[in-house]
Image (cartoon, rainbow, N blue to C red; front, side, top):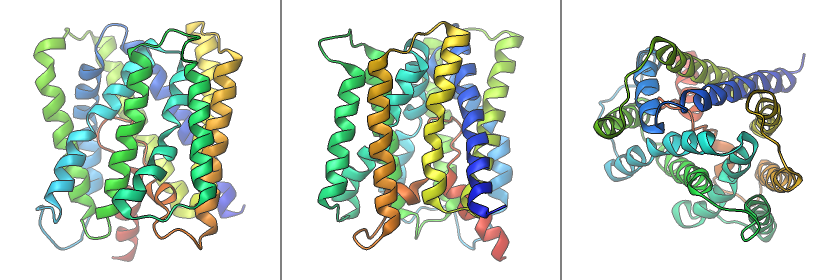
Length: 319
């Protein structure tokens, strides 16, 4: 079997697990706040990610070379899953995903001032079309917009921002540094919110959070495997398969009706994102290919990042 085909299969399985992860989050959020879910699932993810970081044999210390960017990214990352989880709790899954899919569009725009990326007319046009898709999903004036919509867009913006920062510093910063500080920041910042949002956990809820942590970690490993054996241009579009899972899960488990406008807007956003990925893959006009090379799914709690875990795995293979 061709490596790209295998990579696509691994990615499809991974994003199916991610979608199941998000369904469990939606169930757990009926009794717990997003901040509490992120805190406990991150805490439960900590041992698993620590085992991954032990494999980093790069010589050096834990002091970041870019402390400003590291601190900013560590402050942003905890609120990405918190915002996304809140969006899952109050919005239909398909609608939340459609808005989260705006991340590549935002990465493309942010790469201009932060990475000094040269973005041509075609990619800028794709971004513009993608934002039209966002408006189709939101339907301002035609539907009541709430905090859930704002939270989903905030999660997309936060993910795009941390992704561009990661792309800027990752060539010189150790992967373990880029993983450790956001993990610590997530546990610390979400812990500060607990006195205001904490509710006692029952055994079933604690088990649900453990499954969230395990599913997020396993799915991330599968995406890492996909990017290790396949081309990024093949693997990256597989994330959009989540809209299928969201539609099925939303209908079967939550009785959510996905309207035609949401699906139309999602299709426009997805088409724009795929165009940007393929355009970057062709090369010639892009110095950084920020969307292709970021490879992150920051709506998973615990600080797991595909790009950094790919680097750790490649490092282990060369040592």
